[in-house]
Length: 490
Image 1: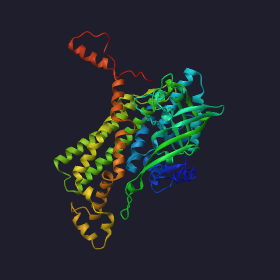
Image 2: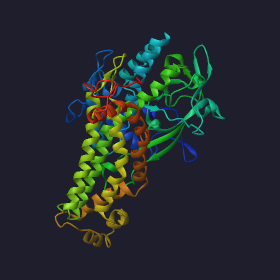
Image 3: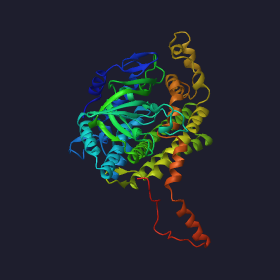
């Protein structure tokens, strides 16, 4: 395992292929470095005694101690610890920890490659395990690119006017493949060592060119990362940990990129392409039951602090609001625990969380986030929007007036009031805050997609039969002993 410092040094050596605001920029551009700060914590937290080694685990391949972000889940305990680690890390940085995409992509490939070999006699799993050893030995920072540009949403990949609107194989060579296309919303790609590319959807028999999965360094020749960076407003005086974080999302363009065969994990296997897509979504939504529980708890804490600083912490309506917010935090996290406990073991040995519990928790997280921010806005009041600039508080003449009139609760200092409401402002009225709202709603899958999955994977006939039995209507099959619906897609 490496340190955050070593991770930064490795990222600094990468080819300059990050494009934003009309020019190629360094990966340590001030607009990007907040995301690097977050990612570096995933290396330093593993040695922090406060986290009780939650971020380390024994490799099932080598027996060596590795970073949990490079691990394939071998048990229920692994799933529970991954969720716990995600929540603790996200609480510490005040937002998404960003590295979960990599471990979720690895776990998806561990199953899809094994299944492909079993059905087609290929060697994808052998390639994958060799790659996994490299990832674990070098403690590589991985992210996953799944969402294609997609073009006309009503048309499948093979029907698009431009075939590159889904990432595809344009040429097969003796030493590898050439790929074209683009992946949208590719989070944290600009400061990852490598990117795992997965199919976005299930593929039909005539869509073999698009049934491709592979991993390459993020600065590979032919890869351009058109980046959109986000970070909280920078502080002038009141330095705070929250102002040092950030997030980046790129349109990752592949222009005739060469991928050697040892890094190709699917190539034409349409059924397994669909499985890889679904498994990644499932594993990633399980990660969300950790990170979104943490995000909701941060908003909960901000709302409670706003109430205290406004002097209304004991008001009945405030306590009722906070109770509802606590319920959301606990239910999101509980869904992840339930999905881990009711997980199943795939043929590859990878443990897979229960799909209905995962999707129920992720859907709750997405649909609740705007209400949570509305609660914060309502209780914090208008000052979170109209707070004078930080420089005004530092002015020798005007500053004392602002310190005097910002006061609410007399037991709280003017500086602490200022710090709190500056954070509330960053959370709600900045570009960073707006970005986080949309990220919380759509990241990992929009709520409507989770609803589709929940309906698909629940045994509705069993539920109807329960009621038929209670009503005295004959049923054809027994309702006894059935607790969860039997999953069919894996």
